[in-house]
Length: 306
Image 1 (cartoon, rainbow, N blue to C red):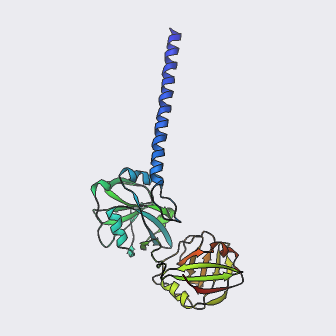
Image 2: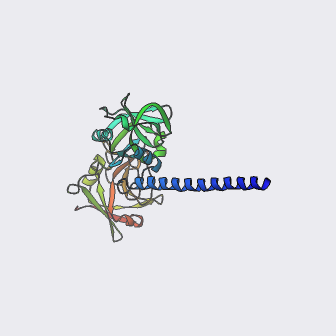
């Protein structure tokens, strides 16, 4: 009797193990399929992929990511978001750039109000928001950036998913600028390009159409001393200070070309830095980025052809 009971228990245990293995294989297949769907979403060059968990949840709703990327800057902090291919996201994108005020809600999100309400559909609604999402609350007409997970009994609508700067959203407040990613760069035919020559090497930068970039452009050509600062940037001081109205704040990466207003420094980054109060974006390196770190002594800064 005891032997029969032992055999019965062993058989049940074996069947349980086999069932668990089959479930594990099924889950792995589902996860693989979800990852494949996420990796197929289009992303612009030089930006990281969106949060895969959030992207999969959106995919289950039938949402797909578009090639529209925006950045939101406040208090020297910048976050970038990739928008979904929805009517509401497109309508927000068409209203950019915007200068507006942020309002905090329940210590989980920063809200702002686009000038025109966005069009939403019931099938796009959801309740469980994740940190790093950009969304829209139709009853109030406000967009919001989540810096904490957030549940809403009323319906929210996804606009986009965070790519960079998710951890600094909480530090934003007051006024903010919302703009298309790199929208300040002019077309290839009309762009302002400059070259910086040092030690036989040349770095070419493409400037944006900000006031500061234009005022630097008007001071060229320059033969000027360059210095290293902090082991991540090369700096020089233009003869005349630059005006920074209508100039976006910088979120510096390798190849960023910027202006630090407090010290009247033009900055060429060869390391990652991020944002800082008073640091404004002038443009980006389009060739020769690898030579920035080796600049020294006197450099020649001049206008170059496209």
